[in-house]
Length: 157
Length: 244
Image (tube, rainbow over all chains, first blue to last red; front, side, top):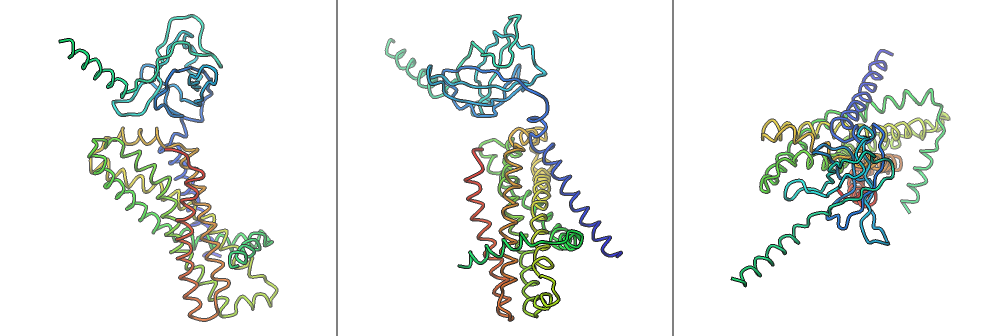
């Protein structure tokens, strides 16, 4: 009996250790705390070109992450990209004339959406559409433009 | 033909009716033997795997001056692939082979037939507790392996090689998604547990009743488990895990 008791205790400790490990994994090593807690509202934005924007890319104001990209699809009529953003309800007074632009973290980093707040009195709410958007900056296009203007500039001289 | 036979056997193990009050002590004993006693090898190998991934990854990332991404690299590779696969391989070597040998010896020495004569069905008295204990133990071991490996990797990456602590941990948090990466890793290890235990128990129960037959059965357990784990790892990664 004594032996089986210590055996039960070892098994119990094993299960508890695994559970603690799962908690550490959830809260310390993955985004469990960030993605589930707190309610959110959904806002849409239409972009001409989203570049390499991915699902769950961060949405930031002044560099602070306030939400994530929850859906990306093509609008069949306008051929624009329809990007849905889930913003934290804590930030619920963003003016409706806010503009959204797709930026890159560093030169080769991942894309994210940066919101630049406007001045309107009405705020973004569930389902509103951000009107002013700036497409992703495509590095190849920029380089192409630069080389083209350089070449045509050389010809003039 | 063997697969069909083995499937029927698996079905009868899973559906074997067992009195819960008598089943629980058996299950606890097997959990102790397969789970708790496998803890040491799991923790040690997790620690070293994390350290070596960190060391190797650091030198590769350094060539692109991207050491900051070490935390992401380490956590994703451990949680998604290395954790489930290596724990399952270790488990099949440490616990699966032991199960085959044990059940095989029981059937060779007619202990299973003796049980049947006493009216105790060996399926629920011998096979089912070992099967379920293994299926419970392997995912738990995988979770512990993941955590230990990541801490081992941070020991090398942050404390020894000098990657920035903040970049290491926050980069990891921003990339590893609990719902996708961690949960899918645990689902993987659950599938591996089913496969390994199924093979081990089947090989032991139907091993040829002599010394040579037992050695063949034990070898087959380890070989088949390793192949099944690696093959299903590819299939599961392709099916349930999307992009990075």
